[in-house]
Amino acid sequence: MKWKWKWISVKTAKPPCKRDPNALGTPVLIWPRRPLGSQDCIDGFCYYGRHATGRPTFYLFGAQIDNITHWQPLPNGPGRK
Image (tube, rainbow, N blue to C red):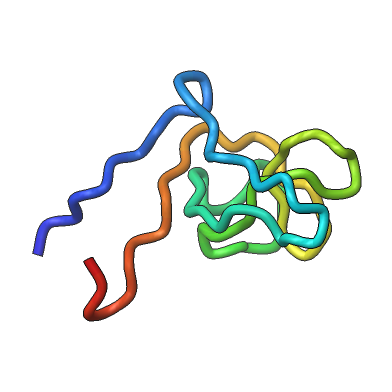
């Protein structure tokens, strides 16, 4: 099966940002999967939204993730279109 989603450059567009302060953010896949200089692999998943800084950013478990070059929305789950 061919993957139909394409990577989107952060220079071209950013994910939609949830404005709800109680929301975790918009879940997305990111590239590179492992942030540059990091010892922990985040397996390509994080959230995009407003967290501690109050400005839109990529983050996981409250920690900001830098050096992201591309992103894509999560695919629909099984049986969803």
